[in-house]
Length: 322
Image (cartoon, rainbow, N blue to C red; front, side):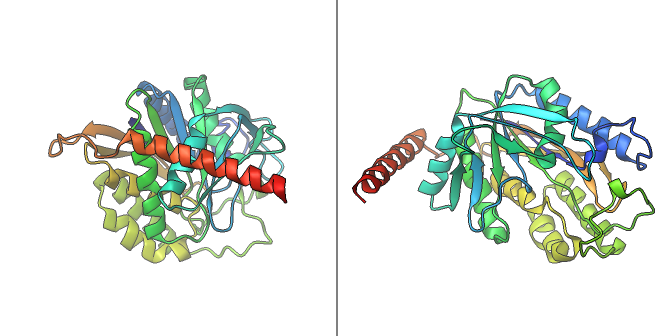
């Protein structure tokens, strides 16, 4: 079952609230992330699904890290490499890949270097920095959505993911999206470690940035899908928000479950420099209008896993005859 969902930023400036020349607002986001981690921990998850925009990226498929573990640091602009994280990859990762493929979705599992630890970078390590002290023993499913997919495709991804997770009645999953908001805020910050790569092509558009970030906050608190998939979608190209696809996965998941509803709360929504960062939490409540159980059958999951196993056996046998 799914017990909570959250949005964590991954700007490295929020890692150390005592760092010199820290942009205004970064310390508040640090405190908000600590608070969100405590609230996620209070729901007692046994595993966390982390949806990240900057992990391994496949051209046409979502990527799921297969483990057995993942580790890395938060290095960015030559700083923050001392912030490290090591996590156990959940055994449900392989089952999720087979289930999503059985549902016709384009997903691949990734194993690094003959099952050495899969690498993590800032987009994973920053949220983990806050989650791990509160939940040191949980396992993780790490998902990287494919770039350039349609909103409809990402809604479908989220729907199948949430149905899969919610079908396990004796497991408790928290779903966390790592993502920042608009990257075109105007800023007066001059320290280069807090600024984008000068070789990049980001042009400030403060009006678009503020509008986009405000729309995402409205979506979190109001739950109106059209705010996310129509209003915010209409300016996302100009807003340049790396976390948008992960938010659409959440929306697809929220819609897919009839027996529960998700009530969102924005803890902080700030832009210390050129990009916006939001910390938000979604509480899971039973839906009053839907008392029947989900039609999703765990036997379907078992069948999908079995089909995937047979497919792999066939592929191995075929390779041996070539």
